[in-house]
Image 1 (cartoon, rainbow, N blue to C red):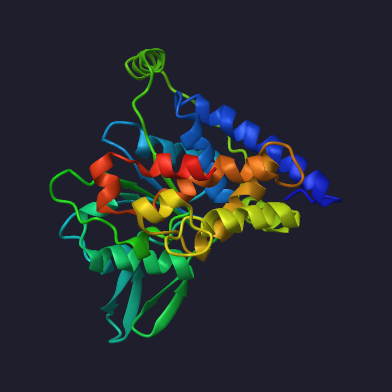
Image 2: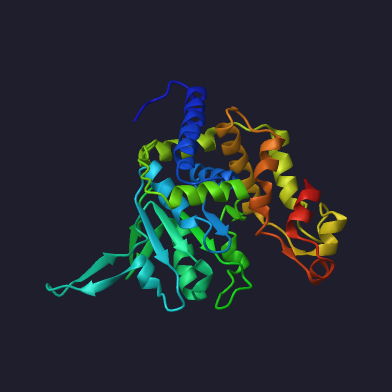
Length: 321
């Protein structure tokens, strides 16, 4: 791995690496620029990402492509109503020598695609979310460390669909970003169909490896932030909490409860990473604003009044900004 003389040089290298990663990914993923950006920011911030969208929007392909370009090990877990926790983390079996051996589950990988996470019951969801938070799994009293870096990208169908178990708010809070996928534009869809219906093979270059990603994750934390930007990020999260001194009239009127301290932490980390990939050495308020919507969207809960008046979470966030 290349060593850098100063943090400034390292931030420049992260900015350059990000651009090269985007170029490689764009050979396979057409459009979805904001989604790709959010996924990469959450990887470099050592967070996890939840993608919400209807089937067929290349969510799985995006994760496979990111794993390839970053030279990371990758596993896909298809969540179904009968999936058990042991199907994710592994289980102990009795060997021929009459001792128990731990057989590792698919969670032991750098990038996990938790496909349709809301199709499985809460008990199984919880097994994954413990691993996300602690970066370890415990089986039979033994603790097993997960490979680093470790990143979960979960996909979720819109909740209205049949046979889903909505993720509880406390579990949603583990995800740094909640990203909504939209349909491609006509031109983008034309390009997608042209590429996928011809005999076209793309050879992707490996831009970074696990060691370099871990280094850049530490670098993002070391990026300095001024007090006024830090206070702006914390006050933004605080203003989403109804019944508190900071809450706005809209928040008191339309929200049941607001974002916790984890939102403030992710706003600061996300702003630092957004600044670095944009070629800046310290974040400003614009960087906080750039990451605010996908960070706050799943952490604030609307009340019946907001539902009745057709007020969306995004409308409340944009007013706060």
